[in-house]
Amino acid sequence: MTYVITTPCIDVQDQACVEVCPVDCIHFDEGKDRMLYINPDECIDCGACEPACPVTAIFSEDDVPGDQAPFKEINVLWYSDKDDARAKVAAISPA
Image (tube, rainbow, N blue to C red; front, side, top):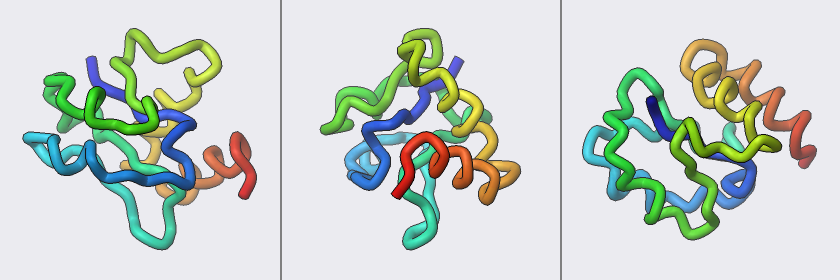
């Protein structure tokens, strides 16, 4: 299991979660991404990021609200196809 970043992070990109992550598994490309992403292969499921998020954008994979379910795939996808992940974010929340 892993943690997932969802809609409230879009266009906010507060990095408090990055600062508390003990394994540095939260990434984004500054100037290109509208949100941050959690690498499911690196996440150790410690939960440190969840309470650090000021916009309540981070959920345990099992607790992601139904309307935010696409972000399970989007977080994973960013690590193999950043452009496709960015397109999915844009489709959900147009700029």
